[in-house]
Every structure is written in C-alpha cells, then in structure tokens.
Length: 498
View: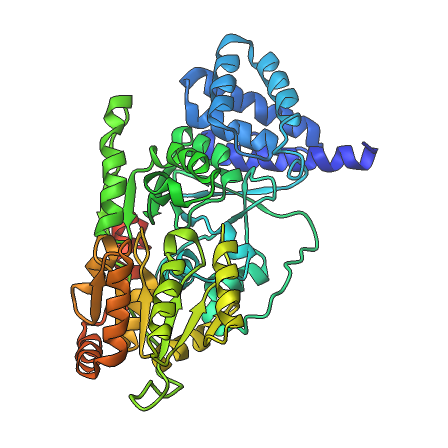
C-alpha cells in the first residue's frame, strides 16, 4: 500500500474509533492530528473498558470500529476471550491484525462511520438495490414512506460483501421512500466516494424485508451480542414448511435466517397464518435457553388507487387474471390445466399471467408456449408497473390465486379492492382474506374444484354479480392503517420523537 493509502486507512480507523468511543466511553481524550496515534489511544481505552466490564456489546462495537464491518457471533466470542486473557496492548494489536484479514472488511476499511444511538433502523438492502416490485417490496415501499413522514427513521442498505450497514444514495432513497412518485426507469446508483457506514447502538434494527443470505452472519452477531433490539416482519415459513416446492438451497438459507430471528424481540406476522408459523418457532426457543419473541399479527391492507380504466362488463370477452411470481408453489400449471379443459368445452375467455418468471418456471413456460402455439388466448405479461396492474385487475372478470402456501396473498386483497372477485385457496391466509366476501374458495390441490370454480365464474352471471358486489362492500383497510399498526407492534411509543 502507498504512503497515501496508509494515511487514508489510519484516518478512517481513527474516525471510526472516535465515533465508537463517543458512545461507549465516559471520557474521551482530545483528538490529535495523527490518525494512527489517535486510533491507538482510543482503541486502548475501549479494550480496557471491554476487559473491565466483560461487555459483549462493547466487544461487538470495538470490533466494528476496527474492522469497518460487523463481527459474526463467533468473532465476538473470539474477541471477548482474547481481550479477557491478554494485556490491553496485546489484545489491541491482535484485534488490528485479526480484523484486517476479515473478508467483509476489505471494501470498508477506508470508510468512515456514523453511530446512531436510540434510532429506528429499517434494513432495506434489496428494495434499495433493485426495481423488482412484488410482495415484500410492495410492503416496504408502502410502509416506510409513511413511517418517514410520521417518525424519525434511518433506512439502511449494506455493503456489497454484506459486512456492515451503509446509508442510501439518492437513487436508492427514491426506490425505497418515493416509489409511488417516480417513473420506474431502471437507474444505477452512483457514488462519488466510499460509502458512509452506519452502526446502530442501543437502537431498534427492523428487518422489514427478508434479508439476503450474505447478510446473515453479520446480522446474527448483531442480533445476539450488539445490545441492539432486532424486530421483524414475519412473511412466511414456506422454505421449511413447503420445502418440496422451493429451490433446493432455500431451506438451508432459511435456517440461517432463523438463526437471526431467534434473537428478535418482536415479530409481526402479515396474517394470522404467518404469525402462527413464527409463534411455533418462537415457542421452541426456551429449550435453547432463549426468551421467546413476542409474535403478533398486522394484517396487510387491500387498498386500490382511483380507477383510470373501465371495469370489465358482461358483454366483453372475459379476462381471467393470475397475478404473482411464477413459482412452483403459486400453482400456475393447475390454472393453465383448468383453462384448457374449459377452452375445450367451448368457453371463450382470455387468461393473462402477470408476474416475473421465478424458480423452476421452465415447465410453466413450456406449457404456455404449447397453448399459445395451439391458438389459445393466453398472455404472459412481465415488467408490469403499478397503474397497469391496477387497470388489469379492473378489466378482468375475475382473478385466480390458487397458491399452495402463502404468508398472505396480496393479489387476492388487491383484486378484491378493485371490486374484482377471486378464486382462491380454502386454507391459510387466503381464507382469512376471503372471510369478508368476494371469493370462491377451492382446494388448490384438486383440479376438479378449480375447473368447476372457473366454469361457474365464467358462465354464472348471477354468481359473478354477487361476488363483485361483496368485493365492493368489503371494509377498507389502508396502507396507513397497516403502517401505524406495524409501528405500534414493532417499535411502540419508545420509537416516537418527544
């Protein structure tokens, strides 16, 4: 490394140590204009404090300041034991050498950091990075802007290695907080320099989206040892409960996710069904000597914007809409099978599938291509933006969501919010949604039931009219309602500004 590079590293290290020492030590020495010497003095004081208190949160913070990355749970233990056994100077030298070889430190060793004390810190790495906008991303992008208006929140992304949190750039802020105000044109985030690292301290870290697997090691260390409180939105346990219809690597990744969630203080399920899954997991934790998280549920809303397109009429060719990522557990092949049975009976209708191609979608695509090649009125629509989606709901005679397992089933609620009836699954969260009316319930594993339900919705105008009326008369639950309830469940009054 060049002399200039050494100076940058020393300056960044000194800044991180001082930022950490300001919240951890009772008294601080005056800064000196020599990065390495200043960092050395501060590191010595923090090591002595950890040694005197045997404080795991202090060890976590000290490692973070030195490495520019969060330690794993094993690394916190390693640091605590070393600091306990060796003189402060030797322990500090060990820490400097150990952190330099951490693969998660490479990209952030020259970065400075801010420590957020007593803050609410939602982790939104995936939503910040991508334009993808279904399910979980819709929840984040509807909820966080409302939190941002009413509360003091600090959304964060992560460094590319998954080593530590960082602030959002302008493009990422737009994706997370201003999605409904921007034109959804894919843009690349650009930064003029190294990212500014973010370290929560005595804060509430909110896992409002499901983190990507590369974040789990750092998150587990944070959740177990940092002294921060971790709370989470509980979406589903599909990767372990319905592992047979998910990618083979997903159950293993989900188990790592559970290694983080088991240290959460509060979890809010997106339905009663989802909450039951997480509550069952939480209730097993005392067998490990861990307290069970408080698990509640905040039901997702079904709120639709004002119409910009006419609704379906009885005189038009019926459109059957199927919205959702094209994954095996969404059961699209059953919908295409039922449609082909009805097309062969002579019924005239169009099927539209809206959603991205997901894992193991090859069979669905092959079946769809065969039907299209045979002249069937079937359309795959991908990259559909929000207003186009809402217009599609309203133009459709009904929608079908025959999923085998859901945490909620947002397309069911959204279709009903547009006054469009739904054929959906007769158990779990979709049954919960259906209780307020507007749905025909079927066993998604029974092809005959799905065929009969679709036939009835296509030919029985009285049934269609009744269910459409029920859909329009459903009580309205808004995203503002959900955001307020979720805040109360995960943060409560202690997260509000005085």
